[in-house]
Amino acid sequence: MEQMPLTYRWYFDPAGRPINAAGVLPSMLRDYGDIDQVLAAIAPRRMLSAGGLGNTAERLPTLQQAEALFTENPVLLTDWLKW
Image (cartoon, rainbow, N blue to C red; front, side, top):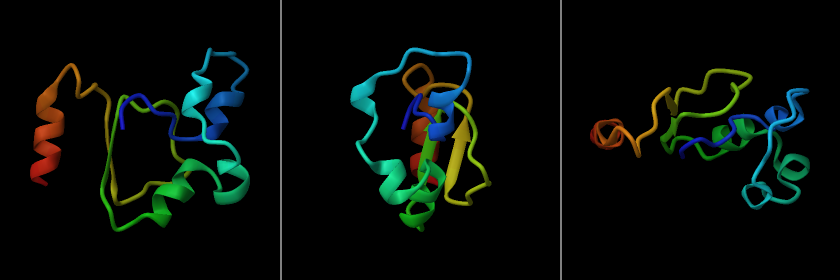
C-alpha cells in the first residue's frame, strides 16, 4: 500500500488535512478496529507500507515500512517482493 494512513487517528488530527473519502472503508473502525489491528489480523501475510501516513500504535513484524514511494523508487517494491 502506498500513502495509506497507518491509523484512523490520522484523520482526526487537528491539522485538518484533506482526505479521499473513497479510501475510507465504512464501519471498519467500529467493526474491526484501527488499521494496525486489521493488519495484525491478516498476519502472517506480509505488507509493505510506502510513504505511510501517521504511525501504528505498535510495531507489527509483518509490516515493512518505507519512507519513499515505490511508484517513484520501484526498487523498494521489487526488493520487498524478493523478501
